[in-house]
Image 1 (cartoon, rainbow, N blue to C red):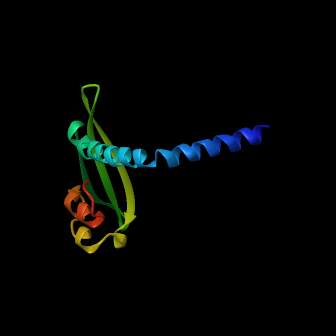
Image 2 (image 1 turned 90 degrees about the vertical axis):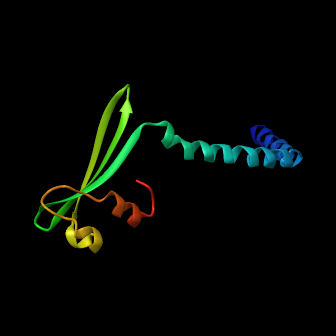
Image 3 (image 1 turned 120 degrees about the vertical axis):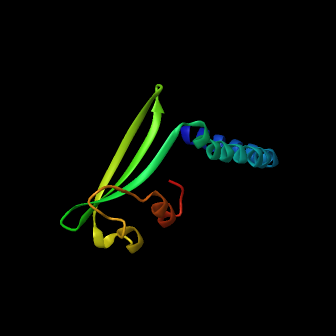
Length: 117
């Protein structure tokens, strides 16, 4: 009995999709751009900033840090993620900025990743 009901539900659902296909497509054409615009505008609505830094740490290793700043309950929060990598794995144009102190590489990493940081 249960397989019969499941099959009937699939058949009725399929028939409804076919019957209202144009309405569904029109709704999606209207809805998807609104969702896309929402996500494009989201960074403007949330107070935040991000930056990337590089620093020589030890024995041919460099620390790449991503720092994210955002507001939470009215207070600014700094979140830092660090990854140690071998200096020879870093692209030459970024490797040139490595020193014993932290150097900002936000623009270089944006270009390397082809995305906004």
